[in-house]
Image 1 (cartoon, helix red, strand yellow):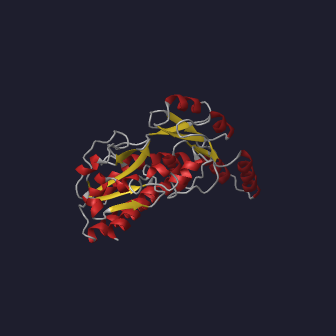
Image 2 (tube, rainbow, N blue to C red):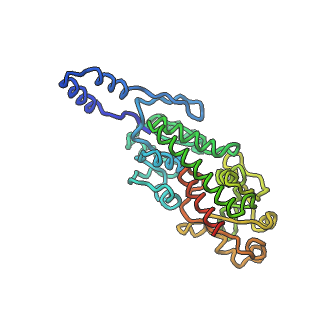
Image 3 (cartoon, rainbow, N blue to C red):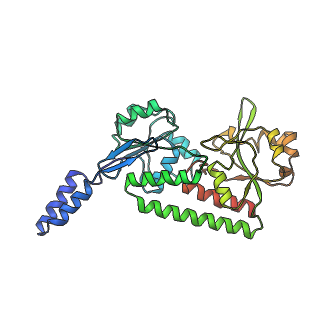
Length: 325
């Protein structure tokens, strides 16, 4: 999330070289392009001004970090680097960014020491933290999620970050690739006679020996992708207005009927896979029709369910492979 493409020294060297060749106009044009300011309006309506495309960028949330990496910008700082490496291997870090603290509470001292051009934050970050960050560097705040239009929200954020980093062509390419992947996945499921199949995706956790299951409704990013693939979301519970996530327990699974059931856990988090853990001996779980039929699919680790085109592309490949095997 930072500014200048060229340092003053580099720009000066370029100008001198062109002058020596007897051509001064291109040098002036290059200088104009280099110093052209970028003005953006973020999700809060705040005007954000940059001296030029941001190069030294910090990401306080993993979805914006994903966007940066896919756009070809290696972030200099990332919240909870270890967590990102555990939960998001679909779009791995290519560098070794500085860990700036937790996703909800970045270290202001660490952020300031990195001297960023730009800080990318989401609406999940407390306003007080955003206010402090704005004293350090320009902050571009994007909407964390929107259950009314999950895919649109994802691409809007991608486009805004691309404008801030001078990578709009790459963003266009990523969106085209994602649309092509959705069509490829939809066709593969249709060819396998799975168009319109009832499908339920969830994740789950064990906390204090209690199993909590989180349904991904049609308002979730995963849910929206599923519908683009021609699958019918079997969840009837209501999701939250941002992420489209619901809440239920094992008894709640009896209401979704005979479905294809898929989930993502993580071997790096022992509490994240109750379906193959504590529920394996649960009488309610083992009596469910989809469990009896073997229609329970653990998708590969490392797909960040709230990420960008990269994670969603890997998700499409995973669900198609699981349902058509």
